[in-house]
Length: 235
Image 1 (cartoon, rainbow, N blue to C red):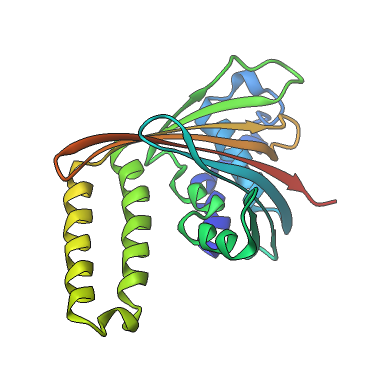
Image 2: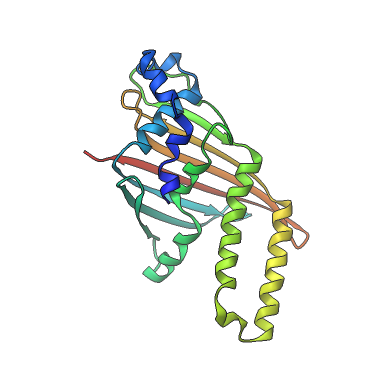
């Protein structure tokens, strides 16, 4: 997880120092959106510790919310992560099952100028929080979803108990083939709204909307995922 927490260094590099020397730190309107995001990313990655809390919701092809869960956690010493999940109306066992497939801070890895287009969501207003719109390019957005699904399938495959019966092995192999066929048709659109304090540049919120379309056994499906992560600076 350390790579995700230190993502700001790769985004900013010498840009942070350059902006400080040229006096652009406080003039939000004069900054291109990608540089404003770089400053905020660096403010987060440069923090010794910070907390975060938010919510994730998954919507089925019919547009109905299928699963909702809240999470909270803390990052300390530039990489040590604590994360807890809670789901309304579900016992602790189900709650623990929900978390591994989605890591809230993993989105940070994809948010950089190489993988996304960055613009202001609203014209910057002096003294007001800065809202930046980040849209992942199609390849990066698809890779992010596909990697998680393949990781989950690999975890299932690693369970040796499933190989006790020939029928179970055949079912798993068939499921893997269906997954790869679906991933070949997968299209993903991910848009993030990043909100930051224009004085400290520490981020306040990261809101995600991910929409995906795919074919499964000849039928087309459309699903949606939303998440909101609030960052909490430590005193």
